[in-house]
Length: 115
Image 1 (cartoon, rainbow, N blue to C red):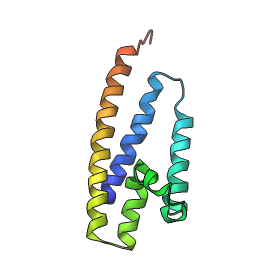
Image 2 (cartoon, rainbow, N blue to C red; image 1 turned 120 degrees about the horizontal axis):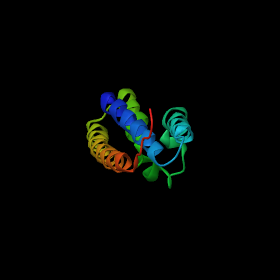
Image 3 (cartoon, one colour; image 1 turned 30 degrees about the vertical axis):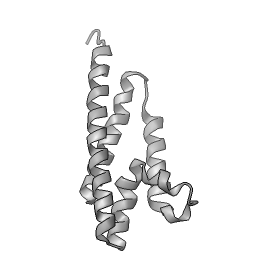
Image 4 (cartoon, helix red, strand yellow; image 1 turned 135 degrees about the vertical axis):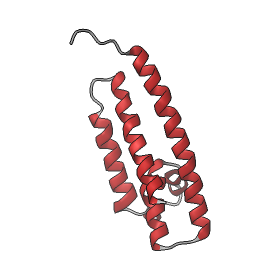
């Protein structure tokens, strides 16, 4: 379960890096993503957020990368396992497709001159 989280996190990092085709430096986006993962995914559990925000957070990659797998290790239930697993598969497919599409568009835009 946590392996899918690691893979999804890596693909999201690659997806953020692909943005470099259009901007010069994607480091700020990596920094923001890393801090969101740290704060929402590990330091503050979803239960600490208002009930209005909980469904929104569960729809983000933060839930499938860190919080969902960690919650399963602490308090395993088959229902949560299925929910996290399906969400991870969906995010895995979406991020791979987005990465491929953006990479292909970026390569078409790329123009390298000189050596």
